[in-house]
Length: 135
Image (tube, rainbow, N blue to C red; front, side, top):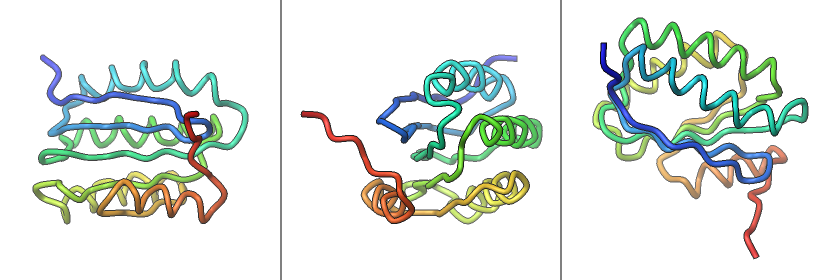
């Protein structure tokens, strides 16, 4: 099956920034997992955090949600401690939040839902993850 959804991954110091547009299927999550692991290897074994900005519907198929849960557990084992999810322009915010809440609670990850990227950075700064400034 063809991938559904889009994403980009950037490293900003100890914060990983993911910009994603859904809906997502299992094929996309498998590709995302490989790309994510390549970036995480640069951060691990030190603690790091993640901001995920969700656009569009942001929904996952049941298979994609299962694959995402597996990926989050793997990310935790590689140093992930906290994730801020920006769901401000998500079409079905309550459903998206419910899906990701299951994923992050199941992995035991500290998480926060935010409406803006600025709020996500503020929350991460409050728990010790400062945004790396470009000079």
